[in-house]
Length: 296
Image (cartoon, rainbow, N blue to C red; front, side):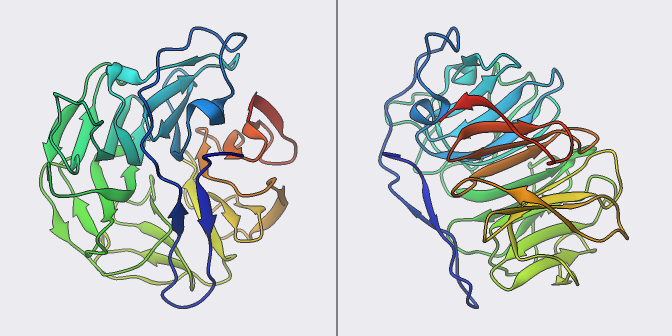
């Protein structure tokens, strides 16, 4: 597909996700219905994250803002009228966190980097919380049961930053390279990281990490909000893996098509949303079967 985000995963120590083709995008107009709209991946040229709001709508973080997709596949956005480049995105219900770059004609946020923005009203408005102008988090995660706990890795390979006050102030943690960070919603100080050398876990809020034994070599990862230790991820070969609880083994639930770019989970973990070569796809049975919500 033209202008798609391309990821090259090198399975060697110190490898990183390489993102190609991040040309500037023109601001998108609100989209009224799926019937009259372009496909999701032509609207969202570069997708950097997915979320699920309190009304069960999907949230798509893109190179031109945050968009909402309802159960019928209808698209709307950019939320709040802000077509910023959302390089990092995390959500906990209707509390959203974004990092990246302001749009070229923005009169609201100064560049070159957004620092951390937040919305507490489902994207209707955005507030600059911290690090404005200086920091571009390419990886963000928030504890979905405690949105005051936020973690981020910036594009300049600085140490992990951790916040306990919703992103207003930060402390430095370990220096790691990671494809994804995921805060465990049921264990306050636990953070998972997917890396070129395997999955890591921290039990001290990102100050140190150790290997998570017996985990597949994942790059995408998400945690189930209501089940302690439950995780879903995608490995470097495109297989979808599910760990249903803390002590349960991982199981293979089929494969994505092409490269998967983002993942989000419903509250119980039975609902899995992905963006891959098919477009925006969902499973409501824990990955056993998939349907295309919006074709790409």
